Image (cartoon, rainbow, N blue to C red; front, side, top):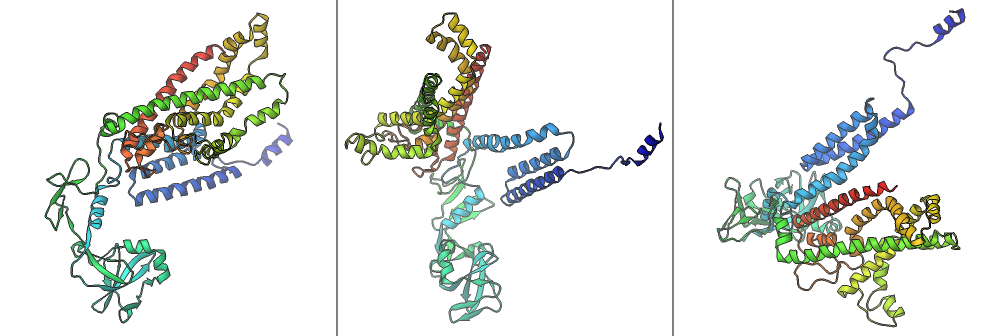
Length: 529
């Protein structure tokens, strides 16, 4: 070894076995993971506060896995897969699982929460003013952001909140019957009280730790009265007793307090009901008849929409794929305008144009005719299909244009040399090669239109409504809009999330089954490629 090499070895810095350098990217990763962990801890704290143990456990597990994956050296592939898996878990698997859970419960109007919440709601809703009770001079106060009442009781000022019973306040000042100062509390002025009127009227401050003594309520924020519930809950016996009539209510299997004569109290709680919701969907005449009609129309709507938009888009793609057509770029730009315009606005625009009395179509194009485009059953269905054709064909035009341009020209030339005509080439070569590229997109388009909520709700709201059924369902409703109506979210019926979830689960199974079968069938097209 030469002397120069020896000196070079001596000058080369020696690294210890445990030395490690950190790149700027490492510190960026630490900062991003710190934000992720902060968000995760926030969600955990919120879940702890509402006792949502499933959310808490899932979030904790995700944080542990994320920290391990992004700070370990042996988990390089998972660094790219984990975000997608996390979103799949939160937005897909959890959603489907929770919908499945709700489908087997009676969750809905009168059964919105737990048994404890139902008991509390019943006691509050059945409060009545104690007969002969005195009126107390009252002021609305606040402490640490929590609203409360201060009252004058036999010359003594007492204050409390919904969670803290009335208690004496030392040093409180009154001007006759008016409370002017309450140490430790902020008095709300008239303007603040008006701003928070609903909170003030709904507030109940217990008189003491004994719930039997009732609570203070007010209607004018100046005078308070003692209210007491006419119901009494016996925790040991798990019964609810009406103190005026003496009727005793016991819990039943449907999540309600029920008397011996079959009458029930109006607030219940969520319980498991097995397959009752599915039995109702298929066995109850109120739902079974409309459900079958809506199911048939949903399939027809999805199939006709996909088929019509595909073939119209394909027609324009074939025409504009011909080099003999002039101004192809301009024509293509014009054809995608309906797709560039927001679909939601297109639905609302067509709805206005087709209005029977004031719409542009009737008043201008048809000279003042009163064609019931949206109120006649069959015309409304034709309108829905027509508007979907207008909104959807540009998308099919785009994908078929791309697919046509990807077909090798030499294959077509060979077919023409062999004597094949244009129709034979289109049927035996163009369409099969086209379907290789577009079949998965057609399946996804079918799934989308099977659940095309906006297209129906924004255009017809499911109408015109069926006249021979009590369920708020109409001729243009598809399954997803029927679910929306049954759930009660549109305000047209009582909420019934359990039944709506059962119908949603049926929709999911239908779409998943059809998609799985058609995807398997499309694999046969690969043999042509």
